[in-house]
Length: 193
Image 1: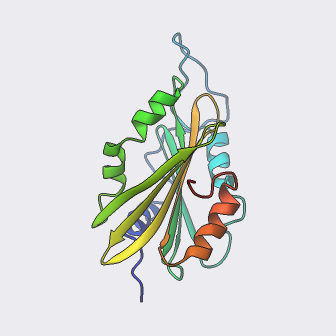
Image 2: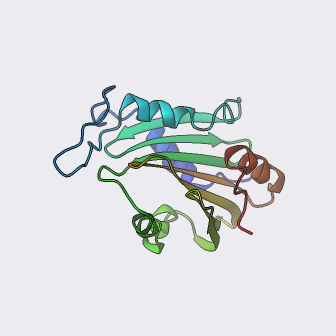
């Protein structure tokens, strides 16, 4: 039996708490800008709704279980599938003062990948690419307990202050599933050329 990716256990730990009890206060009001043009980093109900609805009904089948948390600067949604030995993880990130492409280059740096994949025995950065409309794809191979996983990590410019990230982790031999989920999530960028 295949072991679930180590990131799954991180998600299960998060899900034990349900929506975070220490979450930033939610509001339905639009965020107000301060004197410097920055908005609050507290997620609004619209941020939560956007994150929960982003993948449509793709993961609304019995083999996937969903959890989510709300924290300062982000809404995180995790799906895990024991039968598929797979996980998916979405974050709606809030950049209160906005962002530019160099900010995202810095955010998605080698140091960030080291943190994201710290529970793996190893990982290899395979490729990265982007479209002209602000969609990025980072591809990795992760190894845990001798099993290899195909990891796709997309980042999409959503608004001037919001970025959506989506990571899927499947056993490397699940090529058909990997392609199916990529096509339904980001048809414009399934893989790097």
